[in-house]
Length: 463
Ligand code: ARG
Image 1 (cartoon, helix red, strand yellow):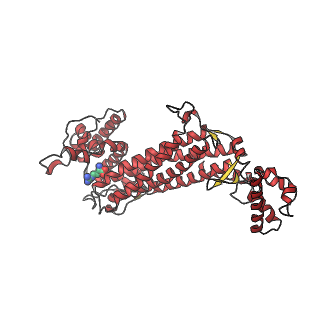
Image 2 (image 1 turned 90 degrees about the horizontal axis):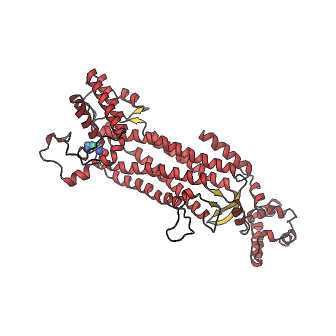
Image 3 (image 1 turned 120 degrees about the vertical axis):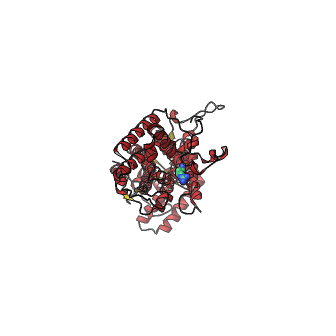
């Protein structure tokens, strides 16, 4: 932003003095809301066409406005437009540039419109536009998880509760648990987009307009499904930004939890995966290090996403109807959430699609943790032993193994038989983790058949 010379403010008529330097700084939003330029121009085009329809512009004036807006659009696109802080925001910057180019027709564009109208429109259009690429990123991430799951369908790992080895699960089952979560995130994103589907424009500053504005035409022109029925609601509602920030927070927390697992799994203690060089960094002092910085940063950035939601909620709390300048504070929260969730989703997909899976280390982690204890208890239960009793018996077997410093694999069938007459020779197969996952008969469980069914279901949903 060039240190442009002081420009005359479009609202300057009733003032004899100018804003102080510090007030100017507090007031200006152009340094961040310039990114609404596409939406602002789109809104102005529609508004100008509507003004022509209701006879407030001549054909020649409309032509001038449309041509002027196209020139400005090209100039901004090419990076040659100079935004001025003294013109406060994107709306006044574009309007002033238009007037500079085409004269009085430009000054007519603001007939039957207020900036409150404009900002309410631009922000909704922005959420709608940006959500498209975020939706694509989410689907791409789910696709990566589905592909990894297919490829590693027979890799077995320890499943955890309390971060203690619990039962064997397929690695793909673990990955797909996240995929379902990301699918729900996509649903939350859709809800935020849905909250933007009604047109605010045509509301004026707050009370409506002294002109027969054709809101139905504006709705159609700008691709909204309906019209906000109350002008005061239209200019003061920021629910859709809260909805977006909520989506981004929940998705961010999910990414953070997943990153925490990548950090753990890539440690030498776990060794379940190796992250690619492209997403790991070295240490300036310890030559051997490969640090999972990208996973840590995505985990860390989730804090901003939750913070943006909390911050916006605090900004909105206590605002009387209708527009209050506090609402300008919604922009950095929204833009930061858009940028952060975009980067994080892309980073996550890159880490996952380039990592190496070490199935041997996963297998090894299953060899010394009694991970099939529940399967042994179920084995006895199937033979009629009450589950509470079989639980007790297997507990005693575990204790005895611990005393001897061995796992179930160190026991022979005859050893099992000492603990219960119900044990037969086939118990030796039951204690194997590969067998355990196939003993899961319930739908949604970790058997091969059920995991493949999940993969098919997800594939259909992200098509
Ligand atoms: N830059 C302002 C915002 O972001 C635009 C609306 C200004 N309206 C006003 N009445 N001052 O909210």
